[in-house]
Image 1 (cartoon, one colour):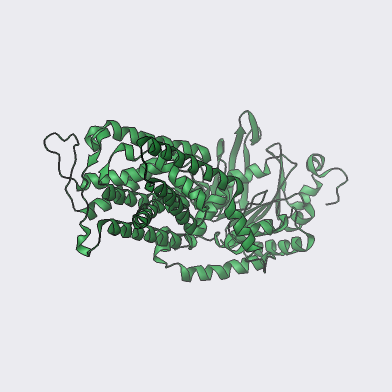
Image 2: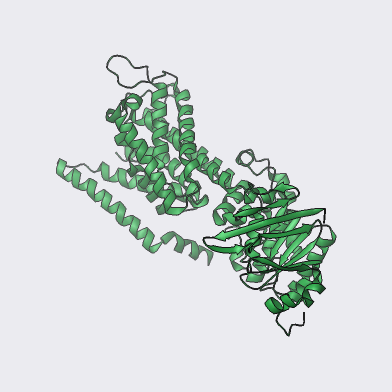
Length: 306
Length: 257
């Protein structure tokens, strides 16, 4: 029981860490508030499902299925997230702060209701079931362990690449662009291009994570990709403390562990399970407020510095 | 003045119904290559707005700015900076999350600055050279020893010098300085004066907005006086000192500049 708790925490914790690491780049370093994170995740998951599923037959309502191997679907997920980031970023990035937050949120909602109502893409509200996934028995691994390892690999590669990205002249450029665009322009930096680059670069791993999520759940449907995911990742990022990749990972792992823990509790009745689910959300909210109000990480950092 | 590096041609800037720069006929003046132009005038005369129009932070409502025969009307501020124009701001601007040295290093356009270079890691060598250049620029403005400081710990005058250093590493052709001596102590002002004289001698075109006329009129070889956004007078520093209009509008009757 403990083992399965730890395993699912590791699997989903690593998977959602990819999202919070990307958000960390986009928000804490790039200074862009993106409240549409789930859209890039969904774009990746749907692209993976569509590229790997069989062509429609019989009563299928979806129009596309390319029956390609898993790795092609995985790459398609990255491309889909990139394209969606370009489409949403190009017109919106001249907006700042809360305006950008609202617009990205609106784009995500547009994608969500499009997927919900357009049956030819992903079967509408039913979604695409039985998503193909690679056979991990080749490595002699249990499926669950295999996907936990895959999620960890994706998380570590993303963290490593983003760390490398920011510890370079490019990182300096990103920081300068966030700090003062006018001053950055005055030394010849194209801040519009830099912002779009950061926006797109940070969407790519989110797309890959979406593909992995589709493999794990073997189902993609609009109900799985709601704004709840966006806010879950934001809460994780705030819990872990902004600006550091490690903080983003720890915050996500802690939040996933907490949720998985509540789900582990055996309940006698449906009623008590429902109450527990509500209590879980309430507690997450309380935790969030406590961290915001007392900022324990800031205090720890100051104590270390003193 | 056939070899003008910068031409301001009939420029007008309106903010709503208010004409900040241009007066009735638009603002026109030329800056010769290698010249040292002083831009003076009372508060609100449009000096900083003129800088913003030349550097592309603002776009003229009418007229145009030409840098080395290139019309800047369709250029972004970053493109204009890329053409070799540098500027400082009246209120110094810095990047607070970078160290003093990094603030200067950001100034140079790095050939390996893009995201792919960052991933490949092929920026290290050129970045090392850049670091040395940035250190030299900091020494020129009296900020050596502050390399690893946080920008937030610098004083107002030091921030101003930091901004000068950030533009200096770019080796600009045309350098616009907006009140470079404001809040800067006398020792550093002298250092700045000799730095500007050196740049002038090396052929850099300089345009300086300054209320400290003792400082400016000793350095500049030509002065443009603005009042209410329009050109009030233009000439050599000595002519400007004696010009009765300038005395009345700006210098005051009992000036000893």
